[in-house]
Image (cartoon, rainbow, N blue to C red; front, side, top):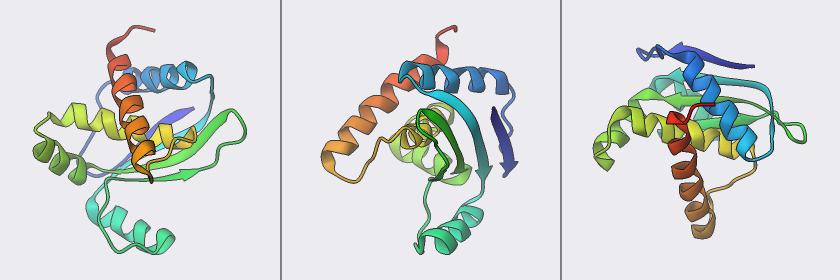
Amino acid sequence: MIEFHFRSDLLLENKSDFSDWVNRILESEDFLQGQIDYIFCTDDYLLKLNQEYLNHDTFTDIITFDYTNGKTISGDIFISTERVQENAKSFEVDFHEELLRVMSHGVLHLMGYGDKSEEDKKMMRAKEEEKMKMFHVEP
């Protein structure tokens, strides 16, 4: 099950469109859906998680907690909507596009894609672009 929780001002109107899209991402990589929770929150909320669980004292746009078991993807994906808004301005894209990028980034992490090395970052960015395009594709 894919669920959405809101700890910020963001509210997704068409949750089923987002759920269907995430399912298509999983299927495109031959993974199964477990329990995936997207938690949209503020910078401060995510900063506290970053400090408490990762010992990082910095703002970030996303933190993913992975509970995947084999090919069944499960996890908590915390997204700062304030960071997404800020990044959208910096990258000169609209909020929706940047939100899709970050949402796909989180689920790609759960599938095992990393972003520590330059090579991994290139692969992650290519996968994000590929998955974002799937949002408008009918199931």
